[in-house]
Length: 196
Length: 421
Image 1 (cartoon, each protein chain N blue to C red):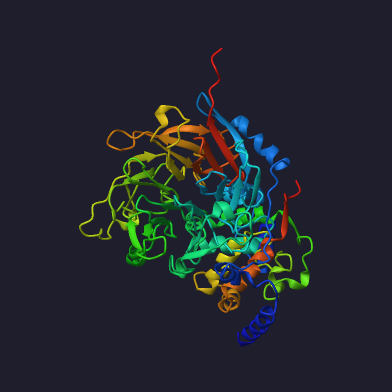
Image 2 (cartoon, one colour):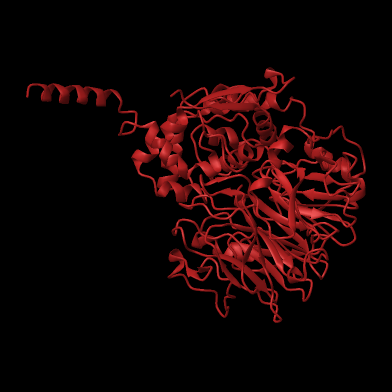
């Protein structure tokens, strides 16, 4: 059994290389099954079916996983999501995040929109068109303006916390918040399923 | 940290120079009967969308003698208020629009759907209601506005508007959420406004109890139509999204939405009857007759007897908008009874709901029992929704409108029995 130690060493090396990622390998196919719990509100492809839910198809897996874990641990609270996440294992969270993250997204600015008018506070992380530029930021494209508005106010009032967002939202007026929300809400979003 | 703060301050400074910040100023202009440059959004009533919606009709079952049709294409359609003349039905949303649904020729199909008062920046304007003398009230997440003679001024983008409850005065701003903030309003027999205030949690934390009770969060408040005289009228509700007065005796009836996370089959849904001001319906101690574990050891309010639900309904079916039947075209058995919409469950293992329910009342004014009136918006074979009924209203001819915020439609159910052969 000469291979065993080698495999163990390799495994150890690989693990060391991905310590930033959560424990288990994820499985989008298993995640699709978990997503049956999500579909009524977020759609099976992550295009939300109700205004209060964000579009999650094609969002960074890291962001989705972090939010689900935050709901599970009580760090973030929502009357529905806290209930859902409490019942999910870390593996299920990893899988369902992988399922939604495996979708493609395409955002299109509305006709006549001037990209230079995009909210300058937001674009470096969320893009001009609301497609995330980094792993810890959600897509904002085509979210209901009230959803974005609600989240910004939650950051502003300390109900939701994030090292960058809390600072950015702290000084925004209601009017500025709605203006930002309206910009991203007007973007058209298409979500495409993962290739078979 | 300092750098970031500086950067964001600089960016903020540049933002204030951007255009289109005029929205809030429109309220001032409108109050002074001035014009704004707002324009209407019109919803196409004849295109592919209408065709797709009509294809849902074949799946919907209604009792013998009734027929269902598509009344209007209305995105995100929530609570409805039929204007006194019946020309316009105002329809709220959980987004930023109120729709004017217009039927000028009274052929019982909407001729035109356009946004109401596009000059006003709405924030979850879920709940429109009318006073008998034609004032439209719109209860938003955290404000209440009134539009005098809205039925006659809806065609202009700048209707006169008054503030009944100023922004931020309906609930403390830190209690704003998205989900449990869909307000419903009614003008009661006493001429006051009755507005439901959902509490924003699944079960509220104990340290919020007192403040919520004082503000009527997790209850229904009543206020004079000028915003004065606020009282908590109904206590002990979780998140009611449908109430109406019994025209026969003035009782207030309301539905409620139940606690999640206790399993598929509890707590049962509720429809409640309130016979006096200040009655308490048990939440967060009990919900549909089921004790809530988090409150097992929390003292109940002293000297208060909880009022039991009138009916125990299918758990998690989400009983929402309700209305007494006062029309004259439905058969006698429906007279004076209550119709309500079950929106459908969101996380039940096997989905339930997405239908229109009915109960008669007995001679004492109590509910007799829930029966299904219309169903088929839930595809039982896949568990997917074709539509999700949200509210019930009645046109002047006694026919029923059913709003559907999932399909983006208003359905019409009329009694039209085929003549005997």
